[in-house]
Image (cartoon, rainbow, N blue to C red; front, side, top):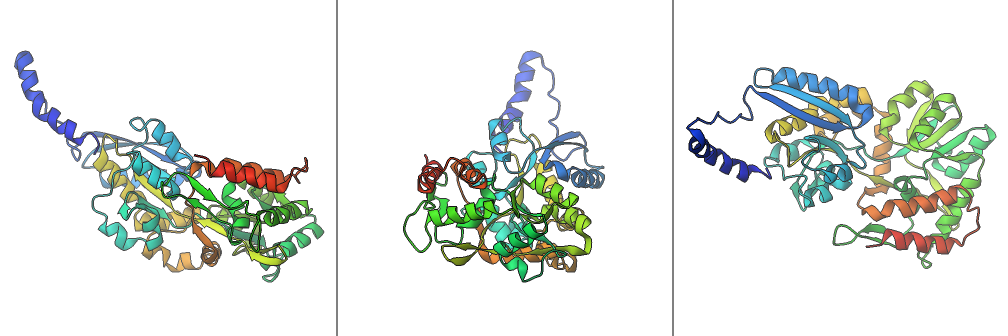
Length: 411
């Protein structure tokens, strides 16, 4: 990989150097597929550790006759894997899980090399997952899941299929029951829901780093302040609560939350909490500027990357292939309820029968790949948290949106 040329030169020069220093023969270099010790470090989500350890054990057993493979797992959030890895590429994990919106930056910084033989991956993975793992048509990572999006979970004991079509109706019923509908407004990822289908836009500029943003627009059928006013109305409902994903799940389990916006990673826990009453659907509409607007969503995939600076690149690639194989993705669905990126696994009857996956597919019509630069997150979160608090200082909504747009588009 990055050091390949240097290592080859060193292999050729080393015997001569040692002979000049005392006539000793250089020991043969350790072969990548030899019987020596291969130490690999893997970064992944903390909640995936049990599953990954199971996959590590099967990988080690499969290759037991070829090398002594030692695998160390270290929990690392998939959402900020890029920042941690680029802080110390040579000291980073050999294999790591990350969200697909980081692939371009990782490739540009030299953290990922193009996958040399990508034909099999392209032929066996969903096209959207291949696109998400590619930069300029070149594949840089191994597709793991095709479900990194969000939708609505709801308790059927409180809502009918018709009720969950409207957020306002859900909030009304939740308030009557003394319960809550939850959504995380501290995360800009979820806040995109309110702006995505309004004609107000956000995205990456041609440089692939900076953003454009019209969320503060004062023109058009729906203005930025219209969205802000709708968010304030939602926040004012006694049936609503802005909760982190962890708080949402805790509320589901203690009965205080009867609906919320989340993803497939919570499918198993919600099923356990609500049993036969567990329901899932596309996001509802919400009232904005006198009309019902379908809530949008970001979509994406989880990917497995191989560090371009790995000391054992071939073994790291083998492990990445093992973690993302059809069999492993089927197991991931069984254990974690996560939607496969592998075509065969995704089309299996078990996956197709999953309410969470069905809801995600229904929401996909109103979603787009998450492609925003790093300046997007904090300004949107700051704005949304103030909306969740009811704009206590009474600050001009237009002024807040202008500040949001300025922060998001900063260079």
